[in-house]
Length: 251
Image: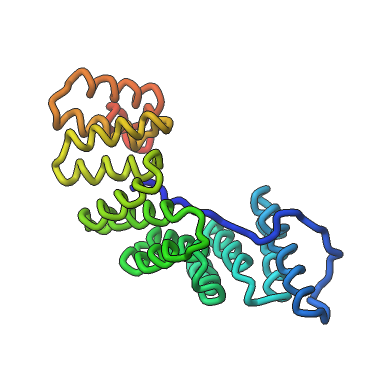
């Protein structure tokens, strides 16, 4: 399954530094929201630098100013997920949806997280909620995620439905093209799988996953020359690949 895509959005685009403080002072509602936005943005900055302890401090400060500020909970979810605290991550992703239940980004993020921890059936409702948000700028991403997640749980017909809808919005969306190739392969439609893989290769760089899929497709189609081409690329780019003739875990 292709890696699920996320769009982590914070409301603050320009960063304003606030004096450090140990607790949130009495402020107006608008001032508290502004402080939450600023600390969330700072928390993301520190997270991007790998400074997780400082990031956690800033994000916790953000929710101390405004516990209903969904982007702060989303970023806390991302941080906890990054450091392997899955239960805390799930709690924060769910709080983000609780405080902003119609927002496409927070619903897509929760869906992607749930799919990643094998709560794939539950994830579906959040991807669909994201698509229903008229202000969500990338519904094709949520549909692509829904398709990949449906494929992971073995529902190939539903996966195809979501992926085709995603490609109707953006015919060059790499993740959907690769997933449609995999779905087609699993359905036994090898020529169609080849066609989608070729479309993927036209818009995105090759990956271990795409090259492995190419080997499997061309093996089924009996094109030995194409099989060897994909295997050579695997050997050159990913020498530890099983399909390339290496041993899993090497490289």
